Structures are given as structure tokens and as C-alpha cells.
Image (tube, rainbow, N blue to C red; front, side, top):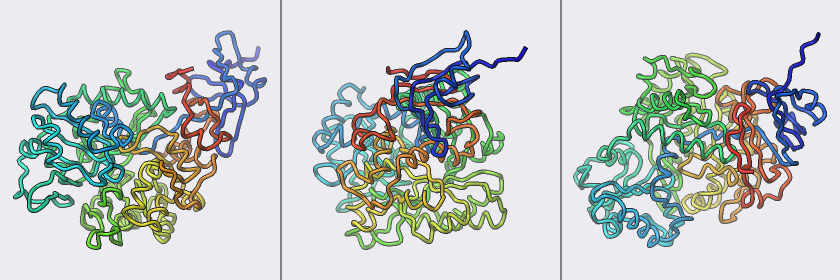
Length: 541
């Protein structure tokens, strides 16, 4: 008697996009958390047994679970409890100060008030808030107001006092302390932010786990089943590794996470990780050690990304170089020789040049054609740098949500020619560089629909059209959000497509991402259902 394998779950009567090469099917059968088969409704019905569950998609569009290939999961969860300073929530300086004052009114006197998300270009005053403005709004609480990018913050007088930051404080290497007429104005950029953070109470393990769970559940509600946490150790050092393991063991890790270890001098968790055997690839498909990250520059909108040419209107400002060439090359070589993949922050072409050179030298000394070192953000690479990336097997890892959120800021600080040509994902796709995408949350919302909209239209949130030659087709955009996210994590054999043997991570949407008008993808799309390993983990039907 022949053995008949029956599916655990069948999704049918849908438009199921399995991958760019695989195309559309009507149904998918799932067994033990993985895709068993795909095909027509009739073909999958033959795999139905007495215990098989069946879900009718009612003609809706489904895809592999999305992969946000660069965000900060713990920070996203924790900042969900901070004051929302985004332009949508606080479009004017007065509204922002009012929101801070409202939070202070329900916060014990002397406790910290944290906020994140402002963009000075989008504020009505067109500049950063000042220390004095924060003092007037919140006189009795230390305040740290962080720009959307995370590379700039404004502190009030009480925060500066608690951190012992004065006009005489030396400016840290790779940092900026702002002054006006010789007096601190509260502006802190890059490494200078660490001066304030030493005065902020440490995050507890339970708070870290809460952040993981809260943010992970939010991602599932958006159809995102996997992510890269882009700087593990940034908030609480090596304790974040413990928090992730505890979250997984207690069933509080909602999404698959690829851990990127913070490797910056003075705050690196690489040595602790190395001693614990946490090398790239260690772990399982829910929680795996990924790459090592160092920061080479800042953000373009904050005028701290390291450029080869000055910012508009600031002939002496080419941004911030975080580390000397020798230090970058030594860190990259050390990590590379130990077997780590690298995923380093470089936005401006100056930083990209420094990073590509370091990767090239490490690979020349210890060849590994499939190491897949990454350049996180990679916002303003040159054609020659792109060619060198291709030759060395280096992958760009951009966040196309930046075009939607910050495209107009790029034009304002760099001019139209340089600003509109940023984040050239179309070029990278044509070159075969397998670009992925992400949100850098909490820099941008992890909501995937502005990200997808920006990839297929090259429009900013205000409607400005960036260089149209960098647009992607619908299939290319979804491929960046699924298969190529998996590829850059060396996980293309287990996730990113809906093919037999891969994890049944699936997102179902109320809008057809391949056929619907572009504007409705941005404004009228919801994730109705998310499956992780064949289990329904989000259901908004």
C-alpha cells in the first residue's frame, strides 16, 4: 500500500507570488512548517487529508514573508513608548514642544523624557530645536530629542548637566558638540551623543525582551517575518545577546532575526561574542548570528554622512569620518580573518570608498568569494565604486524607505543632481548586485508600503520624483524585499521564496502588489494575515 503524504495546511484560491522566477500559483500546501508544493487549487487538493486545515484566500494576493534587511528591533520596540516626534505627529516646533510638555506632565519629576523622529527640514522653522526651547517646554526633566536618523540629538540643560557636559568638554573623535556664541545649544551628533547616554539609566533585561516582543509582533502585523537587527549591543552591550536567547526560549521572539554585532571601538561586543563561539552562521533559523557592524559616517539629512564634496551652502562641511583608515582596515581584517561577515554603515561616497578599500584588502589577504560583505545604506556610491563592489562580491543593503521619508532632505542638503540620484537600487539590480531593502526602523517606520512605493515610483512622500532610471518593476521590488534579503543573510536556501523545502513564511495582503495602482499600495494596503513556519501568527481578516 503506497504511503500518501498529506499537507498540514493548504492555502488556496489566491494569487500567490512565489518568487520572481517562479511567478504566480493558486495554492500552496504546507507540511511541518515548510512548503510542500505549489500549484493549482486542484493539484493542491490532492494533498488534502482528514487532518489538513484549509484557508480560502478569496482571491487575495500573497507573497513570501517580507524581510526587513536593516532595522533595530530592540530600539524599535523600546521607542514605541517614547514621544512620537515624527513630522506626521509633530509638524511644527510648537506642536513638538507641546508633546514633550504633555509627556513631562505625566512623568515623575527628574525622570527622563525621550523622543525620536523629528526632521529639521520638515519642521516649520526649518532648523533643529535648541536647548533653550527644550528648557522652556520641559524645565524639570532631562530631555533627549533624537532626530529620525539617530545620528543627531538635542539635549536640554538638565540632561547636559547630569552628563557633566559643558562648554569645556572635549569633542569626542567622530562627534560634534554644537555651540552658539560660545554656549552649548544642545546639538550633539554621532559619537558626542554617547556623552549623554552615560547619564541615562541602563535598560534592563526585561525591558530588552519586551522591546523584542513588542516590535516583533508589530512586524508580523505588516507581513514582515524576518529582519536583521542592525546593531546588537548598541543599547545594553552583550546583555542584548542574552535577551534575544531568553526571548526565543520563552516563546517571545515573534520573528526570525539575523543578529549584527556592534563592533565599534570602545563599545564592541565582538570579543565577548567570539569567546562565546558566536561566529557568523551560529544559531538556527529563528535566531542566527549574522555580521559585524562598525559605523563609518553619519546621515545625509543630518549633514554628517561623509562625502567627497561639500554639502550645499557649507563649503567646509563634508560630513563626519568616524574612524581613521588604519582602524577600519584593522577591524575589518580581524573580523574577516575570524570568519565573520561584515555589514558596516557607510552612506556617503567618502565612507563607501573607505569601506570598499578595507573589504578589498581583507579579501585579498584571505580570499573568500562567498563571504558577502555588505555596505549598509550605501546611499551615494559612485559608478566606479559600484564596479568594485561587483568585482569583490560586496552587497549593497539600502533602505528604500529613505527615498520616501528623506528624499526631499537629500535634495535640500546636496542639491538636485546629487540628491535625486541617491540610493540607486535600479542600477544595482541591473548589475546583478542583488540589493535588498529595509526600513532602518526606528529611523523610518517598518511599514513596507512606503518602501515598496518608493522602489516602483521613485517618489518621495511629498511627490518629488527622484531619478526615474532607478525605478524597479513590481517583481524586482518584491524580490529585493524577499529573496535578496535572504541572500544577503546567506539564507536563500531556506527562506525568501515559496518553493518546496523553504519555510512557509507567508504574507497575505488586501491589495495586489503586482497589479494595483501604485498610489493605492502606499495609501490603501493592509496585511491581512501572516504565517511563520506555516502557523498563522497575525490575522486581521
